[in-house]
Length: 424
Image (cartoon, rainbow, N blue to C red; front, side, top):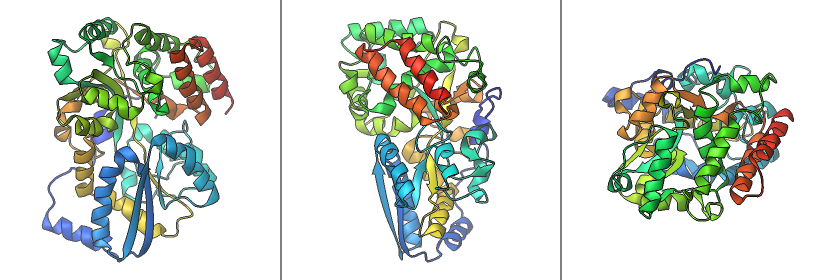
């Protein structure tokens, strides 16, 4: 995407309509996918998406009883550490998770150029990729993975806690701090932070930077690539200072560096904490842990002018077929099967996140406001999508943990991120 273009719900959700299946459509699916695939198909996913993927696996298996599908899940951190090595050694599963852009070890710009992924440009699902995201989903005009969901970052709020505190939704940074202050006075942890899980460390940064940086300069990522901007001296400093302000005011749980993502979810689900700044893809797990649906996702206001507020928005990780796959036809057929309206609808119901092709009226009420921001063009593409290499994100991860421990300064952290950015 070029940052000057707006990111809209039309771009995300335009396409197939998810309607009820007719008998004719069921018959077509059976004709298309009951091809008597055999042998073994190994599929790997991140643990949060396993329930949705399992539903697709079960249905595809029923159509192909001679095919053994082995579905395994792992945490994002584990995937980043192991799958790249498997790709290099030719031992990776047939279907592997892939991220957009170039900012993480399993992003498409990092692994497709190495010849590790099969070209999927001619597959039907290729038509569903939003135009604004093509430069972070494609490599040299070719598509190497199946991506089916948008993602947003913001506070996931337990409304039962919020209502007990008698609070309204904060629309400015000052109002947000005031809400956190009242929650703390009531004995509730305002923000559950699981910084012991590395990828969680970035989320508050992104949620703030969407406003502090990209509200003023939507072309910031392009300016960095052209050498016209750096992290140091930019409004990234403002965002990280505000991150630290939340800690200094005592608005996080005790020992966030020793708290895992799962533990932070449990704090919110059990009403010990009011909210956690997470991705939309974690909502289903939060609801399951709480046993109720009294949650909402809001934009995090980064400044005192509510009109400036933007939200980070992107595409969730999807799935590619390894070039070394010994069952490539079955793997590609499985990805196309996941693109069928029936499977997409089930996927959306399980993950509680919209999928490409879903009509606006089917958007879960939990996301009404954040998707309105997307629809209004008030989104900033996930920052790491435009970073040239995974070293920038690694410097960010480590830097945030050092900031929280008091062992580094904002300028030091951003200086290391600048050095990593220039090392591409």
